[in-house]
Length: 463
Ligand SMILES: Cc1cc2nc3c(=O)[nH]c(=O)nc-3n(C[C@H](O)[C@H](O)[C@H](O)COP(=O)(O)OP(=O)(O)OC[C@H]3O[C@@H](n4cnc5c(N)ncnc54)[C@H](O)[C@@H]3O)c2cc1C
Image (cartoon, rainbow, N blue to C red; front, side, top):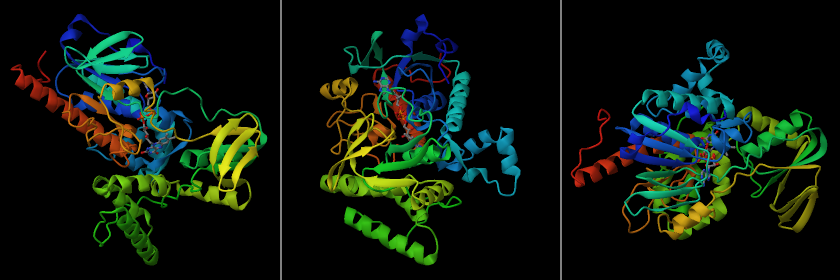
């Protein structure tokens, strides 16, 4: 979906008196934050959405290769925290999905959909929320933000190519950094040997599609950790709580998961339910770990954890293992040191190796970009602080940026930017909950400031 800025309201002279809010980044997190503000932030405001990328397509998740299946089920992708069935209901407004829902085998809640379908749903909910708020002015800027600092008059100065603009609150939603528009799906013709770099669901999906479309006779899948995603169960399982006490240490967590998985195997139930429960409680465990335990988690456990939380739909998992058994896919463990036009230089336990290939496709998920000019300015201004694992910056559950001993001033870092503080905050259900918590936290803080300054509290019906 390409943006047409004219369809949004443009700023008017009254805009100066409104609460001014900026969202930096229009991927899924930025758009979800905008939806939550439109739905839950009472009182008129002026919202500016910054992103140089010209499309609203769900960001990295949906836009990298729009036809790629997302690895969460329909029932886990509702963006309405009060209505888990919201995405299914939206899908069922389409004849194909309605017929599927009516068929005996068609439980739409358990289905997996391509990124572009999810993206269309999010965009429609955004448009609806926007239509309902005639008191809100929304402006879309096709511009990247290069610095943010404190404004001498209070709030923040946001620097883009348009110059400096003052805001009362800023939501950072820059996820995996500026998008370059390169689509890892763009490959033409057929080759004998293709390399796909990445060990996640996106890389596996890409490798399988290369083979299915006859675009490669053989694919080498390069996984840095050697792990590949585990499978989902054939129909969704909820969270299964173990009767053992929940662990408080990394070692305890290992033992807990191993024992629970063994018991699940003995009982014939899958480990997925245990993992679902573990994920829901992982935040409390994470807060209690020492910095050293967190570092050990990142180094030794994260790849295993990721391969069990980001799972493949069962059909894809079977196709992957059939392709490996049949020799169409070879899995290599190693770190890619260099990508050339005719292959890659791979660092393995046995030393450096050259892997020749006719085509190389990089499907790695980029880390959050904390070395960008924007984050360098934020860190230099002591407005944000990198977490000790360099996964992101310190935040609380609502995304409020934490810089000891400063109090919160209206700066939020949403979604994957908080990965060092909040496990799983890069996933859709967690981002949805965080977006609403952030909208409420901002309202409470502005209300508090207005009361302290003797002004009237913000209310939806004023002005
Ligand atoms: C391939 C893939 C598949 C996924 N599948 C699922 C799934 O099935 N289920 C699930 O729960 N989660 C899934 N996720 C995870 C989750 O959806 C993502 O973590 C989430 O979409 C992150 O979105 P984001 O908006 O924070 O980041 P991004 O998508 O990276 O968007 C960030 C945006 O910010 C912009 N930006 C960056 N820097 C600046 C700047 N300085 N100024 C202005 N704009 C800037 C970029 O151009 C970009 O558009 C998936 C993720 C990926 C990558």
